[in-house]
Length: 455
Ligand code: NDP
Image 1 (cartoon, rainbow, N blue to C red):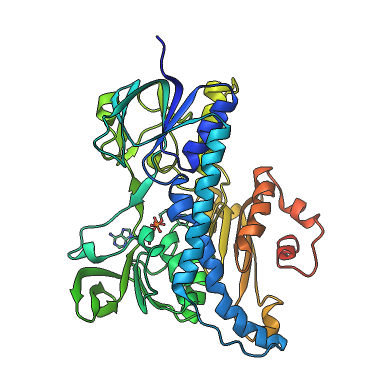
Image 2: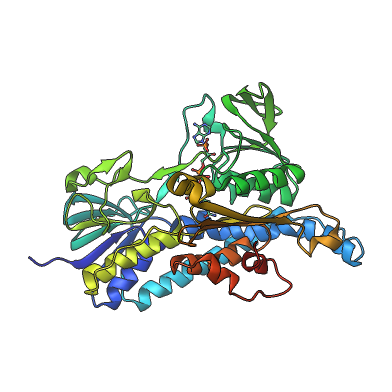
């Protein structure tokens, strides 16, 4: 049977675009559907605008710290609209780059919302013009790469809360920001907005932020955030949100039984796959716990349909979605059977100070290796802060299996943690031993050298 496309991709985010281009490189005829801006969450409402705002948020601290080095005080104020405008201009540029990349790869972009009619047929409804009749396309293989969206739990008044998507579109800077949730998004926005000058209160239901991270990272980042003036109300949860003339009133239960007022309330309580109206039931694609079920080759319960990225809820990170998609394209169109490895996937939290991690946390390793574990850790004031007067600590930590000498985990809190841990991730991926770290000469003076001088 002949189809319109060898591969049709639903969703032009990081995973979808990377896969479409890789399959096209192998000579496949590829189409892709997208109803919104090219680049998905990462480019339009996630990693990229977030990181640009992280940079913006660091300037006030730098102006202050410069005085320790002899610079005169700087009087500078933020023009919120200028910052948001500059960020969006860059996003538009990136949308254009993605369009050109698809054009150059000869991937056909169909603007609209795709829905399965059967395992090989999709209906694409033009999102801009609903009077245009839906277009039907057929494909031999179909890849679902539709991403996810923020979860909004059932709290009375939750409709008044904003999501991370909204944070990039706020017309003005909130004076008082209240954040629900202590995960990546809650922590990053708390630090960004505090750095930009908002008053920030973060409400977390457990004692510590960043569940799943090494405990030293949780503790150090939380302490540093509090030192920066972020009010963290732990072991508490919201029971009601009310719109009043003075702002949003958030009523809490738990350890802090109080009300907090907000100009903007950010709900950062996790994300879930975008599976609404996809017609998965028409294609026999099964889901489990609200995510598409896939095997190690990203194949769904329907043999010609595959899924990658956040809609499968494995590790929800851009580079993981890209890697999953390329492994699929290599296998199905490149004749190179490949599966994505989920071992030693590094990640970072762009908090202030930054945190980054690769491999097992101390608690995970303890469970697996028991007493065979040795922990190497250094906590110190980085050289930069010896003159700034700031009492901010950096931490580097290695988790090592003494029996084999293998380094199981590397964790860091401090400036450039993401840049440093990326290099460590290569070492861990290669199976580096503590002796390999010891045999490596440090770069002096640097923070990274601490990783090779730990005793
Ligand atoms: P996370 O899953 O990281 O964190 C969710 C937070 O919300 C946790 O603190 C959780 O608490 C809390 N929570 C969940 N449900 C409730 C509830 N009903 N009441 C109170 N608290 C609740 O989600 P995020 O939204 O922060 O981020 C989503 C994903 O986006 C991340 O998992 C990550 O994959 C990705 N991301 C990655 C980034 C990066 O790589 N730098 C940056 C931003 C996002 P508890 O811990 O107690 O469960």
